[in-house]
Amino acid sequence: MTARTTTEGSRDIPEATVARLPVYLRALTLLADSGTSTCSSEVLAQSAGVNSAKLRKDLSYLGSYGTRGVGYDVDYLRYQIAREIGVTSDWPVVIVGIGNLGHALANYSGFRSRGFRVVALLDADPRRHGEAVAGVPVRPFDDLESLVEEHGVAIGVISTPAAAAQDVADRMVGAGITSILNFAPAVLSVPDGVDVRKVDLSIELQILAYHEQRKSQEVTA
Image (spheres, rainbow, N blue to C red):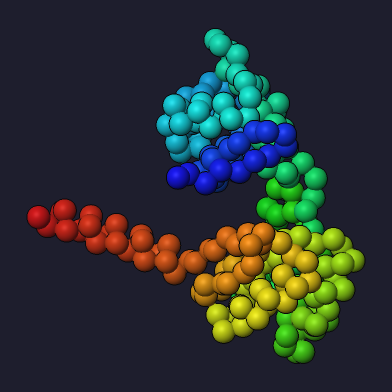
């Protein structure tokens, strides 16, 4: 059975479609930045790296935003998708673990332009406290609960070593965070009602290595 997400009202959107909506939003933003005001489903699908039939089906869950013979109004569709996935206003985000990866995430300018605002950087290492990254001071991890309450944080990012990730997740959940983006190479256990998205860069590289190996085997066959 396909997992589905219910959003405003009674719309029921498959999780696979939800995962592609940010890709469409990015493609529409690039089209808008290049001065494109309308585009066909074929052009948008090519920009997003999917086939046009899949794109049209995905957008049908949001409503009918295309005009036959004209295509999609880029700015309007971009707004509708942004509203659907909830990024028309800033979401406060806290990042825990300010090592090399944490620094990179804190400095990532794409957060703000995509509807997210880093309100706190936390680390258990006292040597990092007071350091500023992208204008945000690094604070003790023990400040987590007060910062979540102060800023109304619902989304937390974990970029700690694997051994610390579960304890950090437990503290986040206890503080009221209900969505976690996990960069640590660890599988997290969280209660029902808490969403976890895992980003494992080593696994992605291993998948690429597999494809490279297959290519070399095909060449030598």
